[in-house]
Image (cartoon, rainbow, N blue to C red; front, side, top):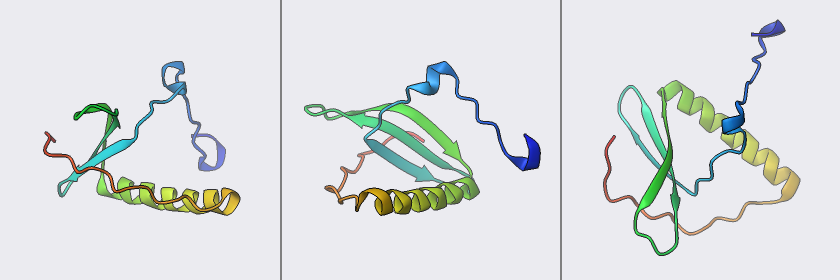
Length: 95
C-alpha cells in the first residue's frame, strides 16, 4: 500500500487490452459467487467462457455498489443506457 492506504494498481501488459465479454453466468453458494464471463457469437449455440471470477459475497456486494455508482456517473455524463433484450438463460453448467 502507498501512503494513506491507497492501493497501487499494477496492470501487466498481457491484461492491458482486456477481454471482451457480452455474457455472464452467475452461480453462488453460501461462501462464494462464481461469475463466468463469455462471448455469444451469432450463429452458435454455445458460449465460450473467456474468464471466471470467484468472489466472496462481501466482495460481490462491494462490486455491485461500485458498478451502481459508476453507471450513475456514466448516465449523468452521457445519457441513459437503453435496456437491451433479455439475455438467454444458460441451460446448465459446472460450478
